[in-house]
Length: 357
View 1 (spheres, rainbow, N blue to C red):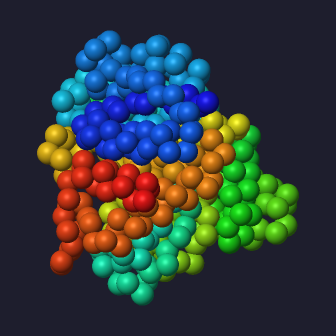
View 2 (view 1 turned 180 degrees about the vertical axis):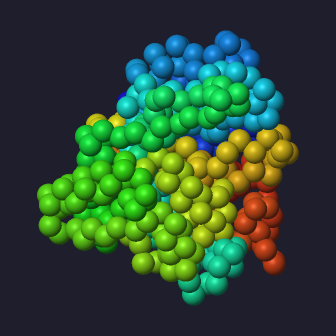
């Protein structure tokens, strides 16, 4: 029996996580999975109820679980708060507390959604790439940071810092994933102007020597962004820093037609993971039953594959999602032409029905 911490978070988080829980309940009922669900608080709702975006109880519960399913955090309601109390600090905090350093962000184009991409079908058709993003270092965590007064005006500071051991471990994660895919790692940096990226490139070269079956190439981040749009299918696994990975993965998401389709996994060294859609809390559509829950449902698939060693059941979820798309059902964000537009709840029910058929 596995124990899963459910963290709906803010905005559309509650709606989309509810659909993923339907899928988990179906697996429990029909495949004797025995996944025990416990619920917790994170983000803005956690601040409202406890005064902290990451309550101690949430961390305590997380450390007693086998994996975590997260919705989304944040919203304009909490933007006036002191930075340390904003919802996003809860997300950064739980990643750091649990050592979730390896963020896997797949960008897969479902054939049924080729027309939803902003690029020509021949450019994106068959797209299947994995972005491996370092998640607990770099400029999001580096010190010193802050805003201070210098020379009579405000001066902002952030520090992009990495130890070579931090670079090496994300490198190993990327190479090991590439060994099971197309055996090509593209490391993305800005080594022509940033010393921390010079170190990044040097360490990636050192790590690559342990994986002679995997090809390593390098791109500067500006070129990588261009290449993602020009010829995304040239990539197999991309590995990059926290900041660059944050930007590039959202760019890759739109190649697939909608950010609402892409799940992610954040793993520690033992494959304990937190699973979440890569999109935000979308407070403007919260409570309207129009959010796309498929990325959250596919996050359950990733959880089964990477943390619970249930690859066969993970594939059943993937097939169920594909079957629903084959039938022409779409949420608003991925709909076009003659598609049958459904709401958040109905999409969840359709996936469960396909899963059980």
